[in-house]
Length: 373
Image 1 (cartoon, rainbow, N blue to C red):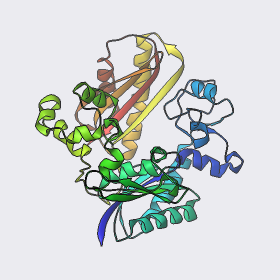
Image 2: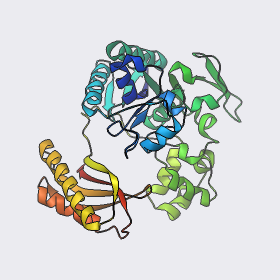
Image 3: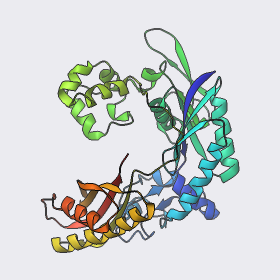
Image 4: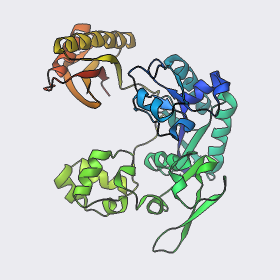
């Protein structure tokens, strides 16, 4: 049998949990964020597919979401409910014959040995549905990178719609390039999609570099400035050329990404958060920097309480500032030693805040404590 990596991603997870609690909302645009009041400042945590059709997405200001989709139902964030639903899903996944690596509330990698990974994917989707009434999408790959990206093509409203696709549940045949062979791919509506070494460039070769997991807009823009616009072009670039431009580690790593290479294993150790954070969106802008400092101290104390409760010492503190109208910057400060001490975390947050030189009106502040790997 062959070792496969499967990426399980719960569909519109937070919105789906809310719809389970309120069945009358099924089929309606649902937006979750803040305290559920779109007249207040806050951002969208998640949106149902129906709301996404209006351009509503995570991180969008709630007021903008209300303008784009006036008929949307707005709900407050209920962290405890989502954590409970997530725990039930992950327990279901751990009941399978697989190594399970939890990534967060709504996604996990599984390593499985099978001659029919699509059958395993269907079994996963069925068991999650039966145990939780939640739907999930499964990406299949020869490594984590391929599986993660495959999930996007399997989503009900995913990128697979841009491929030549047939009716729901059918398959798509794509030419595999100069060799003249072909590869059969599961279509998006079926809820599964397989991406392998053989099909990698057929699916991703002509896409922009930020289609890759791990490449953001800034890196993509820098690559474009170097004349590298697509995944195929990045894959063909000499790693040493990128090393000279982007660093000896980042440059070659980007080329490996573009070639679909990922050697990181699926590990079954319990999921441990890498950080804990608190943030506040203010209903009126803060103009006085002394007031900003006071708010950061309050947030740092709340974070320190979370750190102490978790029993894992922090090694770094990061402060996030969102200026008016909506530009966000972060600065971090390493702590002298791993600690759970509230004073040390508070001082670390203030030291990070001192790195901000602009004194423009502030609409949001956040403090994050990071733990040792």
